[in-house]
Length: 322
Image (cartoon, rainbow, N blue to C red; front, side):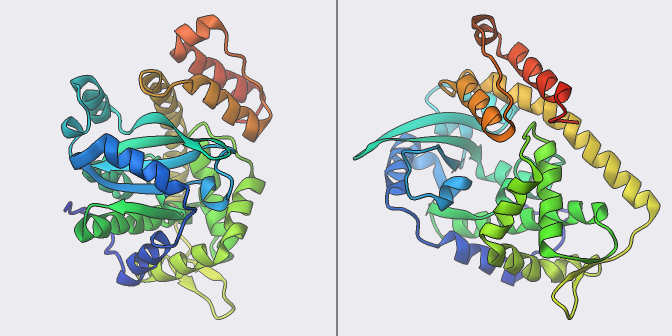
């Protein structure tokens, strides 16, 4: 197991809360995806994690499910070398999956990443690609053994700490609500990924399961002391910080935004090798969350990097991204 120098110790109650949430039941239809992924990755498979908005739906023929597939070694996960090299170069690799259902077809996209890269991404990556996703609700559909299960839950606990720690300098000192802490953090991380969800969307996520976010925040407090504390009225108290630290935090989040734009284009380009209809999916998701319709011309299909630049320019021009 990796040791992460400079990261706070993870409180046991935080890991236990995450493990309890991961163990909650899911729609039986998700087991169809699980069986296909187990067959596809065989002995290389460490874990299958379900996340995203599909956790809250009962009709899996609408929308698309999201999974993370954790493997022990990229070379064991693929029959050829190219996909393994791509996974090492820029994890994760993203794939598309369809599974037949009684009333239609269930669709999913899944990301393949090694368990060690997953742990590192949750605890140490500068960009929030991993730790922003896995500070939110998930379900652990499969784990190779108890050791892997513990590693996944520990990584997610570190993701929660990373999420809150990087958000705190952007909050006003003094009393802050649970909604303010998490909405601010989600808006910052969305802006770092060419994701244009509005504030109302983040508030809906928190209000959908406030107990989850409150339990995790409360369980994380021992590792966040004295930066964050709980007041008698149930509000959270954010410790005041220096002007220099606030400036550094603003610069870091600006850097994450520019880093995220580059990474988004690179990942989109890489997905053309692994994700069937990835451009159509990306355009659909952008329009769904922003109302901005992005045309995909034949030339842009042949040159997905150009498509990525076009998307970024359109979103910047319309003020969706700043």
